[in-house]
Length: 250
Length: 250
Image (cartoon, rainbow over all chains, first blue to last red; front, side):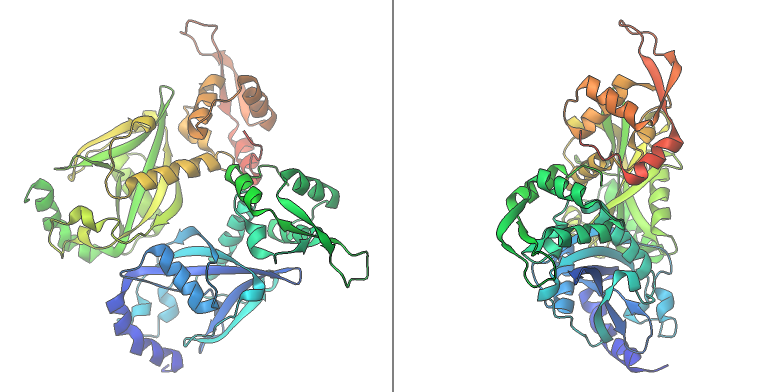
């Protein structure tokens, strides 16, 4: 099986051995929100049918946090992204089997633990980058994921659970929505992340009570219905409120 | 500086290189509750004045979770411990400087990321074990910590923040308190973890409303005051309630 991916990896292997830390990889679950649906950025390696999370390795002279940001930038072109490390995955044989047909001394074939991060990205500013290992790099709707390689489905599921919990503690809405949004759009985002329908009146009351939204003198035009009001987050109040947590149950 | 620690590490280095994964260490913040105070298990390496968190390395053929449990067992003699991975620490030079006087090819001197866990332990069943690297292994009260080595103070502080947040999501009380306890003892535990005084009546009402406690037909005898009632957790209800979270603010 000496296909393109094989040739590329064998050629790059010595450079990786020299410049990167062994045993450690970084994987990123990149969330974006668009057209009332939550999406995740996936790539398809050359010569494979499965999809995977964008990831990479940590340089020997690089802080972990800097490495995760670098990898994200390489994949999306985006900088200053909201990035949250949430769990490290370290089962035996979580990645080696994927490279079973490759030479044993290949860099990519060693045992790795994966330090998983999730990223929240404004969908509109991202340019998915197809790198040299990949055939495709695309946004996929989270309810229609393709088959994922290695343990990437576990990593994705844990990221979504963490995102759900972090609704009360991290500026999730601020990072996923465009600057101006309507209350139904915000509610839809919460419903997808929480995986349940919310009562419209209750949602409105809670959001108002938190005092983290600023109502603008603008409406969203163009729909068939009465034009809904536009809001934006009061970033200072939002972040202050998150420090103690928006600790109400939904 | 060829002291005891130096000799031991140089001798063990080849074995570590053979059997353990490079670049990865595991550190554990072990919490115990006793005499109305929250304590953490620390050890003091031979020939050093600073203290550190118990930790170790991951074997090449060992799941990450199994490695963390093994390390805890080696240090405390305890099994089936509540263990929660909470963050991976990966700053450059977080550990190498500590070994600056040691040979460059020493196993311990390489760059490590540390996969940090916190553990909750019933104080009464633990036998702190002084291993071959250590001079002492002791419980220290969290408000009176000695100076810690490397970035272990950061790791401890993050563990405490995580524990605070996890009060609503993990069986913290169940794992830190003895089987039977009084309401003032439970309140004291919450006050220490949250680092604030709580109103006695409110605390009692909230705890009762969660329906996670079972009141026993026993009282704590021996005090100068009226003997307080003893409670235990209804483990099934407690764990069911934590699934959605005890999402009220304190």
